[in-house]
Image 1 (cartoon, each protein chain N blue to C red):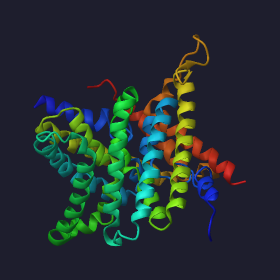
Image 2 (spheres, rainbow over the protein chains, first blue to last red):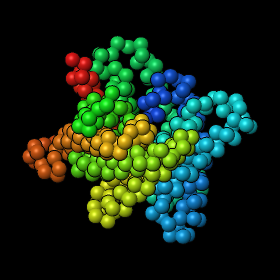
Image 3 (cartoon, chains in turn purple, red):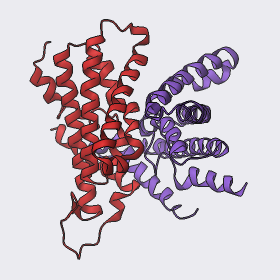
Image 4 (cartoon, rainbow over the protein chains, first blue to last red):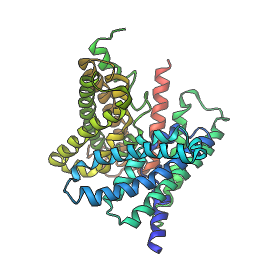
Length: 191
Length: 197
């Protein structure tokens, strides 16, 4: 049990997927201008990432490894993620319309979110067991959501500040992300 | 407006240089630019994938139905990413290990998919090659520039050769994650400043 808690802390804080591992930065800068969209994106990522992590692990273990097809990993994973996102979208639309409305346009965007693909690949690279995969997928996604929400909070304040013209928008966003990343950097060595 | 082949190539070097003008493909930009060598390796891999996928998408653009085009693009791109992955594993194993999961992640690099969708699907093969080569070269230049700044200040070396001599205290902030964000942000600001004249 203790191991799983340590793994969770390390995935959420120490190796934060956005700020330390640099994955998923496109949606990070794109959807963090408003708190509302940040929360929506965070939730959508948690939902899809846990499913994707589990399914890609099963595929790696029972199909790719079993038949010696590891070189097809990239194409297999991306197709699984794309299909999964489509499927989740249809499922939510039919059965939980409220959640579907909440996540809205963020679901299809997740297909090209490198955080999802990245975590699936990390799970395989670190040779995690099935339970570890579940924990790490969830924690990485939670870390993504946490960073996104924190960053959106900061960014909403920046809108009110007077930023020099060349630095506006993405540029100041990146510098802010750097400072936030510095804060997360301080967790290094904790686990 | 018909552009010449040269114009298609040149636009990737300044007008639409990724990741500055098109804010796409940030993840590999931040992650692999710890050194010039990594940046260059990644850039060349992206050029290869971009040119090949542009060619194939452009050739097949009349056959691919538009409803399923994104799925087709992804399969095409993934195929070339696997080719690059296997080639790098065979010939540049040290670089392959350093770039790690970022090679398979080229498949979700928005630049490649973006060019397939925005350019190759609508244009002929020669223009697509020029576009892929131009955007890819622009991306490589950005990666090498960022890599150079981070490597020179972060480890005091350039392509592994010491720049400042042994008494230099490396500014390690630059090669860690926070430095990557700040450095890219400031470079973007400088590009804006230069472009707005």
